[in-house]
View 1 (spheres, one colour):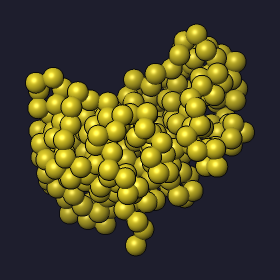
View 2 (spheres, helix red, strand yellow; view 1 turned 45 degrees about the vertical axis):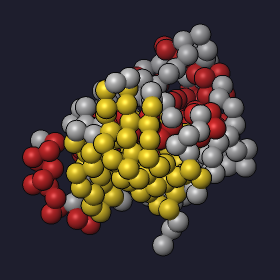
View 3 (cartoon, helix red, strand yellow; view 1 turned 90 degrees about the vertical axis):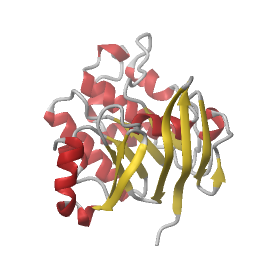
View 4 (cartoon, rainbow, N blue to C red; view 1 turned 180 degrees about the horizontal axis):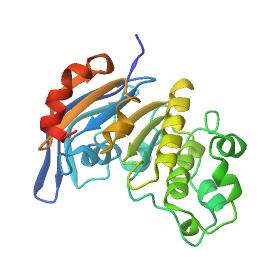
Length: 237
C-alpha cells in the first residue's frame, strides 16, 4: 500500500466572516490521482487554497508527507516533503515575460526532482515553438500548458490542479489528460478539481464529492458506475 501523502482532518476555512469549509476530511496516497467533484461554490477550490495556506483563516489538520502544515506560511508549505505545486484556475501568466521566461521564473523546490526544460518541451511541444512569445500572446490552451509546466519545472511532486480543462478546445483537453497519465506513470500525485466530468472521470483513481463545504461521499474508480445516479443528482452529469 503506497504511503499517505496528504491527510486532511476536520478542516474549517473562512474568507473573512464567511465560513466556507465545514469539517473536510480527505486523504491521498502517493501516486494517486484524486478528483474533487461538486457544483460551483461547493468548496473544491477553497480546499486547494486551504492546503496551500492561501485563505483568510483555517483550522483542523493538514498533514503533507508527514508534516503538519496548517500553521505554516504558503512559501513553507510549497517546500514540505516532496514539494507541493498549485496550478490555480487563473493561471497567473506574466504578460511582460516570454513563455520561456515564465517557465523559468519560479525557484526550484527540489533540484533533484525538478523537470529539465528539454523534458518539459518534449511533453509540451507547443511551448518549445512559442518559447519567445509574450506569455499572454499564447492561446488559452498554451497558457494552461505553461501553467502546468511551470509547476513541474519547480520540482513539485504533489500537484494541486484547479479546473485546468476549463474553456479549452477538445484537442487541448485530450493533451492535458495525456499529460496527467504520463505524470501518474512517473510517480506524481495529483489532486484535481474539475467541472468537466468527462475529462476527470477516466483519470482518477478515487473521487470525492463536495456540497456546501462538506465531503458528501468518497469512492474508487471501480465504483464509478454504481455512483452515476448520485452524481446525476449532485452534478447533473
